[in-house]
Length: 227
Length: 227
Image (tube, rainbow over all chains, first blue to last red; front, side, top):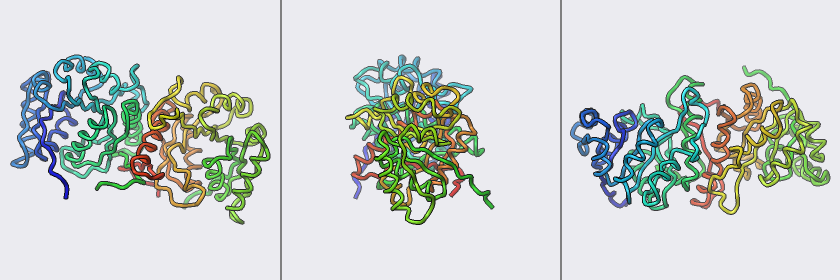
């Protein structure tokens, strides 16, 4: 018997892109209260309506808010912004996320060479977020390696989620949310390990290019799988 | 129909450990000429004899040499030294490997926190080797994520090999050697990506500790597998 899972209020900042809508869909369907945040409230509401149409009558309705109110309202705040907006957005949400878990989905790609790992001076986007947000925020890296094409369409995703950063308790909460999204997650250790998880995305993009697909992923082997 | 594979002379520097003997066993069985190198010639010869006993009559016989002569003789030179000896060994082999491919298997673990990714100032062991050996050497990172327990015993290994660094031609040669060792390899891009491949080892060690096993690995999904 599994114990019943807690439902939570999750704010997805910059959530009008594929990643944000895909995660919103999966979490709302599970029963979490999901807020999509955007710079423009109207854009956030349009994205929320799009997700609600896909949800039909299943799960919770998703709502759209301006980023500021979304970050204030969420118990857990998820960052899905392009890397170019990452630092600014961390500074913007800082006052609203103190004491919370922030899930950083950002991959610091440097166009045009997106298949080459190029980390920012802090070592990774996750470590940059942790430095800016301060020690009262648990920044946890997750979901960087997922092909978002499949998230919104409820297709099976053959890619595991490596979860690192924050303290162990914060990672456990995020591992629960990975499971609620229908994915398999693994505790990948401390925040210094985020360079691997973020950088792996460049290797997967390289494999996608080599094979002309959009589905390259990774799977952890050799340990008991929860699925 | 596959085309017949070239046989090569491969020198494994610091090859008396588990990694070195495991790779020697697999490559010699395929038909490559393998030299195990060690600081002490007698130790190298003892390791070679150990591998030859396991090989029985299959494949080529492995020979042992002092590191210097091994590095001179090998067409392809493989570095399997503990990270503490990495820089010194790169400087030592430098004159003998000009114009060659060097496969760097080193993971820059920093005991006691081996589950935390901690890269050297060059960014990775591979980039350190490339800087020291110079531009006439193609340094290719590979085999860092394999559980060496299984290599020597000819057990199936459920872990793929990410190959990065050097130029594309050098990576292709190394991908061939991965296949000859009975493993599945992937072109993981330029030398900057080695931080991911080396760092992944810390994440896998962490998973091994969490589950009390020695077999955690990764598998690439979502692209056509060669096996």
